[in-house]
Image (cartoon, rainbow, N blue to C red; front, side, top):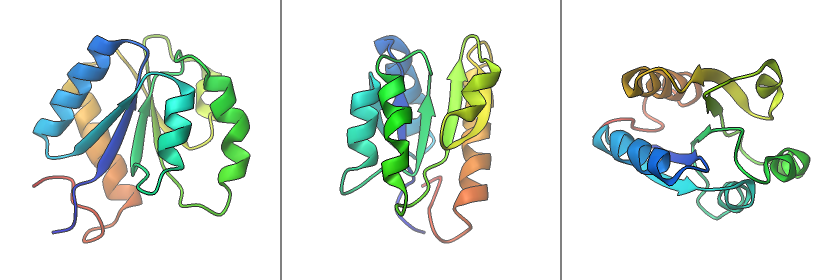
Length: 131
């Protein structure tokens, strides 16, 4: 099996970041966290970018992240799951958004969605989602 899938969780709430990190690590994923759009941008453009981003669009500096998306052209596509208490239609227009899930759903629904997105964007043999 390949290396664990790298997931970036971006949420302004530290407790949400910690909960999702713990839940996703238990599934065998490598998880990083970010508290704002600047940190997300830095991680997306690092030498080892995430394979998937889970993002609450309520994070600070999100507008900077969406403005800079144009400069990622030519780099690998990173799918993004919008995870928000009040998802709005415009959330679907955030560059890279492939799914939207309300935070009122339990974490199992999010874990199922993560596995589904990984299967869709990283065919078998390319990335491992579980140890």
